[in-house]
Amino acid sequence: MRRPIDLTSRRDGILAERLFPWLCRLGVALPLAMLGWLLLRVFVDGVGRIDGSFLTDAPSQLNAKVGGLGPALMGSLWLIVLTSAVALPIGIGAAIYLEEYDRRSRLASLVELAISNLAGVPSIVYGMLGLGLFVHTMALGETVLAGALTLALLILPIVITAAREALRTVKDALREAALGLGATRWQTTRQVVLPMALPGILTGAILAISRAIGETAPLVVVGAVAFIMYGPDGVDSPYTALPMQIFQWTSNPKREFLDNAAAGILVLMATLLILNGFAIWLRNRTQARRT
Amino acid sequence: MSEAAAAMTSTRTAPAPARPHRRAARWYERVIEVGLRGCGLLSIAITIGIVVVLANESSAFFAHVSLTEFLGSTKWTPLIGEAPHYGVWPLLAATITTSVIAMVVATPLGILAAIYLSEYAGARTRRVIKPALELLAGVPTIVFGYFAITVLTPSLAGWVPGLAGGNMLSAGIMMGVMIVPLVASLSEDAIYAVPASLREASYGLGGGKLETIRRVVVPSAWSGIASAMTLAVSRAIGETMIVAIAAGNQPSFTFDAREPGQTATAFIVDIAKGETPHGSVAYQTIFAVAAMLFVMTLTMNMIAFRLSRRLRAQSRA
Image (tube, rainbow over the protein chains, first blue to last red):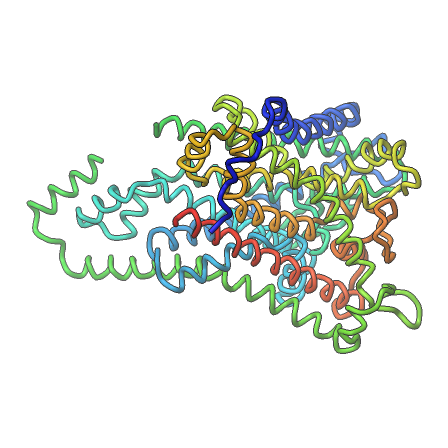
């Protein structure tokens, strides 16, 4: 099939053998150094702006030194709650369907194909779907509900894939034992499989939600507003979100607003770090328990 | 466990439950199953939904703009003046330029990182580096956009003569850094799937470590690595916020990375930021551009899928 290896040619020199691992290390070190530089820079730029009122106050369009991201934080909170309420049950349900009920049918493989396709669709295209479907066809308008539904569709493939992996770690022997004892399919799933897979499912859910928190592009398209004084007071409210507020500050022609953007990024990154740290802790704990 | 055991003994000794109860349980099971299947089918519905929405709204656009003009002209002034031009090439040029730069950055770094992780790094190093790369992958793209305009562009300005304030070069480099974890983790999976026996055979024939990597491991994993790179291209084409913030937002037909440009994604953001009444020309235009974007990324994803399937078939053989 392939050309046989030419045994007569000269081997790589000792020098190349020594140097190559270092070249490989560079492949890891360079991006991580960039990440470190980025975090440091954001911290230096933004930490001065962070105080209690920055987290609660409405933004100011005129003065970069006052105001904050209160409405954006509230908007993000609304989005997360609504998005999770939609995406988690449906995503976990789809995973259970594929892993527990229908492992090998043609329908299931069609669903799988759809999921792997959806996972590769750019987030802005989800925004266009939300704009056409939720904002206009379903006439939800540019509301926090339309934004949350759009984000829910966006993270659905992530939730499904993670939940499937978690379900797959449960041994078939356990399922067979439960079924053999006369339990129904659903009793087996609910009382045997789900409790064991729950930490893994939760880890995936947290990672999916943190993806939703950082998304900007689809929200721009489905009409999150750039400037608003209040957080949402219902599912039909206009809204903004943390990354939207950062985007607005970043694209403000006045340079001093960039420090506000940095402070907003600090808040965003801190939120994501806490969530991711929790997810990794959860994963390591369950891995340790299993071995 | 004790509950299950109790249930078992009770079914053995006690008489079987009354029929009505059983029938109710069966009915309940059925409802659950239908509900779960519904959750699964939703993925198909969403896929169809995307295609229908994009096709529907962009058909209104293509009713008054010919496909020949859209794909053949290099003038893009969709919302300006009496005689707007709808040649998408300026957007495509920026999309291609930034994606190529991103791949030039991400391909070598990602593959080297994958080789390091799978062939050189010890278990402890991996435990530190893998989460760090996941962290990099989890950084919201808006943050990269901020970094590109505040740090990268000013730093590059000293090295690259004629660099515009908003330029495709720093947006592309930033995108490349963003994509490295994707390339690294997928390539590592591919390299990891290479059977140890192949490496051992190479060592047995007197091959050095580098020689084994270069001539046995990487060639064997090649279709997986190619699949990773194709997915990375798809990610780069669809990436939005970095280019919307850092690439300058000016639709001009140029492949010069020092110049500002507007990618397809950045155009959509630029228009959607303002008022886009339902059914207006602006509204139809962004759907047409999004449809093009969807076709491009879908093609890439399908190629990647084929390549990774080939890898699986190979490693089974």
